Length: 78
Image 1 (cartoon, helix red, strand yellow):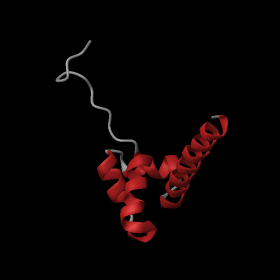
Image 2 (cartoon, rainbow, N blue to C red):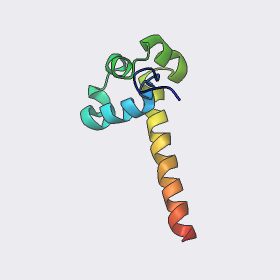
Image 3 (spheres, rainbow, N blue to C red):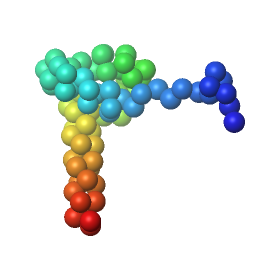
Image 4 (cartoon, rainbow, N blue to C red):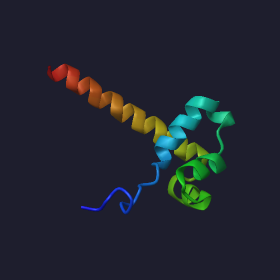
């Protein structure tokens, strides 16, 4: 098992970082440059993967909707 000093640290998920930035600054105040910097993801990678800020925002909303749907299905099965 690798020690804490040799274990690779996973960079933050860009969608999680984007969620926090959108919640903190709103859509207009969020920038792909800030999201790229805080997630350690190159800006051009975000553009390719999500098609820009709007696509990344959609990914954040989809993630939140999926999380809510899972929570609802758990409470319905109890």
